Length: 114
Length: 115
Image (cartoon, helix red, strand yellow):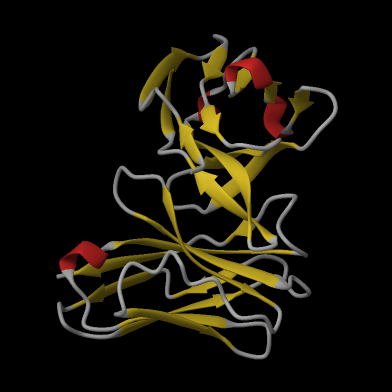
C-alpha cells in the first residue's frame, strides 16, 4: 500500500482480556518495527522483523507481549491478559533494507485498558 | 548505551519567530540522526536525517538541523514558525544493533505557537 496501515485505530478493552493489533507495512519494505508510546513518554522499541530472519524481541516488556509476521508482510502484536499499564499508542513502522534512512510510521493504535 | 536527550519538554513561540529545538545524543560511533514530527492523532513524519558529509541538513517544511560532533548535538531550527508547526518533535539516533539500524528516540518536545 501507499503507507503503513494499522488497525484498529482505537481499542478499548477490559483488564485481563487479550488484544491483537495489526500492521500492514509498505509493499516491498522488508523491515518492520513496533514501538510503544505512553502518555508523555518517548517511543519505546518493542520488536523488529527483517525478512525471514529471527526477530529482535529485546524490547518486549513481558512475556504477555508477542508478535508475528506472516509471509514477510502483515504483522500482529498480541498482548495477553492486558493490564492498565499497557494503555498506550502502539506504533508500527517499516523500512526498506536495514532502516539506515529512517522508518515510515503508521498512525498507530490507541489502546485503553479499563 | 545509546540515548537521546531533548532538554525542553514544552516550548512556546510566537508565529513568525525563529525556533530552535535541542537534541543531545550519546553514541559511540558516527551516528545516524533523525528528526520526526508528530501532529495530534497522527503517526510520525520524517523531517530530516543526517548520515555523513555536510553537517547542516535541510528538511521538509523549511526545517534544518546542524550536527555538531564536539557537542554531541543535532539541534532543529526554523527561521520563521507557522501556526501549523504546532506539534510534538522527536529526535532519534540510529544505533546499529545486530546488523540493523534501531532508532532510539528522545522523549519529545511539544511546540505551541501563539498567533
